[in-house]
Amino acid sequence: MWDEKYARDGYLYGTDPNGFLRENLRSIPEGKVLCLADGEGRNSVFLAEQGYNVTAVDQSGVGIAKGRKLAAERGVSVDFIHADLDGYDPGVEKWDGIVSIFCHLLPPLRAAVHARAIAGLKPGGVFLLEGYRPAQLENGTGGPPVAELMHTGEALAQDFAALDIRHLAEVDREIVEGSGHTGTGSVIQMIAIK
Image (cartoon, rainbow, N blue to C red; front, top):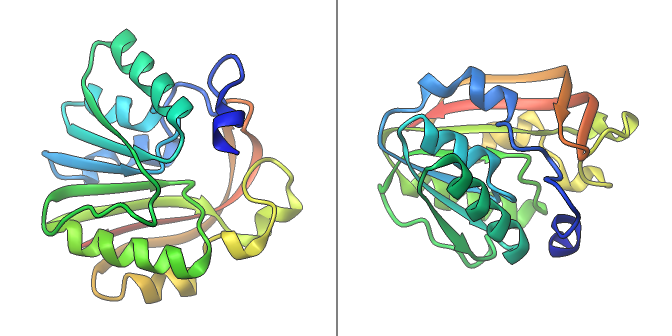
């Protein structure tokens, strides 16, 4: 499915980083950052441009190829890993930051990925997330077609109870991120520290 979406000309979500990530960049400590489900690489390439040592994981080989092209064009290095999140192990206390931007998974897998991410963060490491919440279904401006794949504050608070959640907010904001996300978006945003 994602290979087909990314096979189109251009970048589905553009080449600029996610707005929430850009605005909160300095909340992520310097060092090693992992981008989950990074698609065509816009967020990992941005982080590499800011001096982070970045690894991006995604299930789409087509998306990764476009991410590598974008990184080369921008003159930065990103370690792209072609893997499904259900089988990807981020390790233990390896990352200064983990970024999850519009990474939408079914609840059992989402909880497992979040648990592995918590284990993967170094003490003081930051998990930064923006994703759609169920209210987005009324907007029709991007995101999954079913609420089950979206985030809720209750689920995030439960998944990340072991971390210090510094920011957790439901926001409606204008999103212009390629043709894939354009218009008013009903999102949830979180920043949590281990």
